[in-house]
Amino acid sequence: MNPFSFYNPTRIEFGSGKEATIGEHLAASNVSKVLLCYGSERIRHDGLFDVVAHSLAGQGIEFVALGGIVSNPVLSKVREGVELARAHDVGAVLSVGGGSVLDSAKAIAAGARYAGDVWDLFIGEGALTSALPLFAILTLAATGSEMNPYGVVTNEATNEKLSIGNDHTRPKVSILSPARMAGVSRHYLVYSAADIISHLIEVYFTATVQPRLQSRLVESLINTVIDTTQILLDNPADEAARGEFAWAATLAQNGLTFSGCAGFSYPNHAIEHSLSALFNVPHGAGLSVVMPAWMKWYQDQNKPQFERFAKSVFGLESAEEGIAALERWFDEIGTPTRLHQLDIAESDLPAIVDNVQINVKAFGIADAYPPHVVTDILKRAL
Image (cartoon, rainbow, N blue to C red):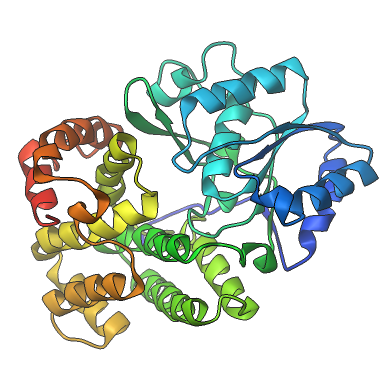
């Protein structure tokens, strides 16, 4: 194993009903006013907003609400949140929603403590040296943002989808309540499954140092995602499966699965970020298109690991069979595997490839993914 340090200070409170304790966690951090960020009005309709408001009131904590955060969160909304946080002098940011809400909340927390424009922190023109304390209640499991510092936001003016994050933007407390995730639509359940698997396979396939222990952990999590997705498609009310699915999402991106690994990269995310930036496709849906195409292109660079994946996850022998099995499973559960399913045509490829070059530079893999390589990968998804 490669030498490593593992430290994850986020406290996870897991269990249905624990959302009612959020006020206690904020009070324990001496927060008296908080910016409450959320997405759709679903949390008002299903009663979660009232539960949170009651919990905060019980601890004497005031809140200012910022709703309307969209999937594929945008910079304009982040800027609105920063201004709101500053104007009301809040002491923390609370995210109630999925990964997009939490991504926005991280950027808002950082921007509120930064003297310039928050976008500076995404493009390296400013240093992320402080952020308001972050708290989260998850209503959708996918991104793993609840236990890592990273957030991704799209600048609508430039079509750049970039990330932010360091120890200052780690949530202090994240609440995972499986019962509050039961309202996730079928489409977003399968998109989430693809998102979780993408987080796991990037390191698994690209690492130059990949301990067997970490491979086994990744394979176990992928199998858990596949099993629980099937259960939830048949019975969305299965709270036990919902809980395992949610915890797998957290473990996929909290640093545990790649501790001891080295030399890895995230090419699937670098490519997909351009799809969602340019065409506003759901992130997980974009990933389920990119992943099989990238795997077909990349497999010869790490054939033994692809053969291991085929055997450990699907009980098959060859790399090609394993890739085909994953693509077939995506088709079976109803998440897209072809660009045309995202309303993206071959004529759109040049614009996508140009945009991807921004991302591969940000991810530090520009030399490995020049335009002709990205074009080759995307053509496999036509």
